[in-house]
Length: 204
Image (cartoon, rainbow, N blue to C red; front, side):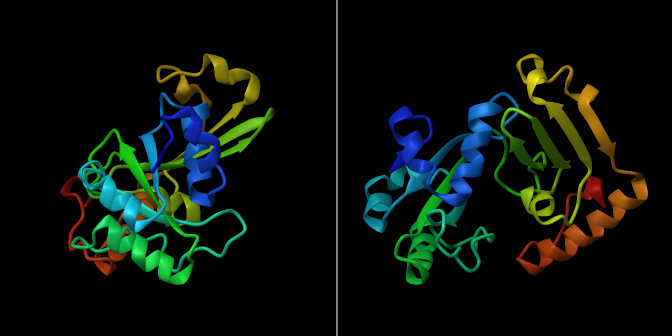
């Protein structure tokens, strides 16, 4: 089992595609990251040995080394009764090199109650681009361009002074009400398609 909180594991974890994105977030933006630690489970035996700890982590995604084909269905969390070991077995049936990335979040892991999601693109030494979505949404919408509620752009030189108090000074886009409501409707359709039959009432 590898953990981002362990400096000796951090470099090893960077060879995995999805993990690499989260590791960049933890490295450069720890204060605003909704992910507080990242765990990689390399085998079913690895999972079973650490099951007591791993079963407390709700967010789980298959991952593969950079350059390997991604796992079909890797963007899906899995069914409610599917254990982390089940997800890993399914991934390894497609690619023996597959691992399971597990996310320790600062917020509720239920996607209907989560505070939102974001996508961060980093041009080292130049600029940082962040797209955000609101409560009840997650990074799927920003990653695939399905929805965007806020956007921020920072020059690299401004990063040392960035904090939660001044971050809105760098906002470049804020969604209008009509576009937001349309994105809510589309989000409902997606959530229903993966087994969630309602959306947060305040977003209806």
